[in-house]
Length: 328
Image (cartoon, rainbow, N blue to C red; front, side, top):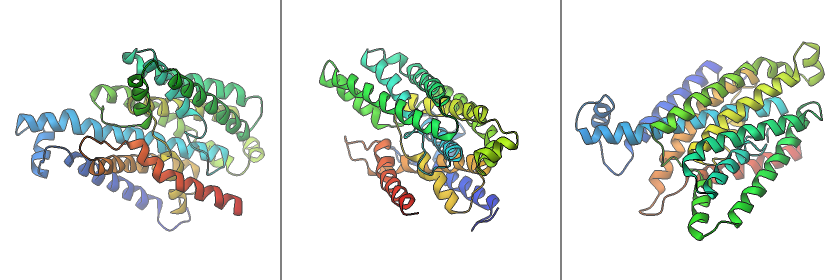
């Protein structure tokens, strides 16, 4: 692999960044704990109150941030590899919008205990519709058009539900949930999001060798025995599981899957098969770090939502990519 940094060194640096971000995340909170107190509490020793704070509040939030970030980063890398378009991302191709629609539907009807399964079902139904429509046009362009169309429809229906919200409190609940946050992270969320994201990551990584061949062109990939429909199915299902499970427990968090793979490509990771796993690690480190930043910047009684911060970072980057592609 050609590039400024070797792949192994860059992967090591990403893991180191994830470790450091995790330590910082575990140290932040209303209760001031030293590093030694935090380590003892993680091991189940020391002050019982410290143990509860670390194991039931801070640790689930940190782990959930890493899981969701990994799913977003890997999905973005896979979608960009399949479409061969740097602008492809889970949010732009409809996966986030479909999962959000499922969750908002449950919130609208007041069945809050079904928000998580509704979001996952929404993501899977959206993936099924995207796949069906994409078959009408062969190649990556069909997936892009189908994803944009289904995503726009899901966003419109979500807006309709918000417009029909029965009272201001119901509307505020929908809006705050859509902003994306890890503040409700607990072990239950980990038990749901973790396995589903892991399955999604496996499916995305299995598609890696096919994406490597696809980078040479669809005709060349087909001549090498690569099945485009099979590759598309793996990516769509993997994306639906990884994104749907993340949206289900934390709301809509955008743009991570857009710029993480692009930055890694800038650093020299051009092989699509290698880009997926390293994007997962980098995405995990990034989201844990940004969640720690949101807690530092949040004022008393005025929480700063994670999805807002990632959008503030991602939108300028998206505009830069759009202008750069147009000028090429």
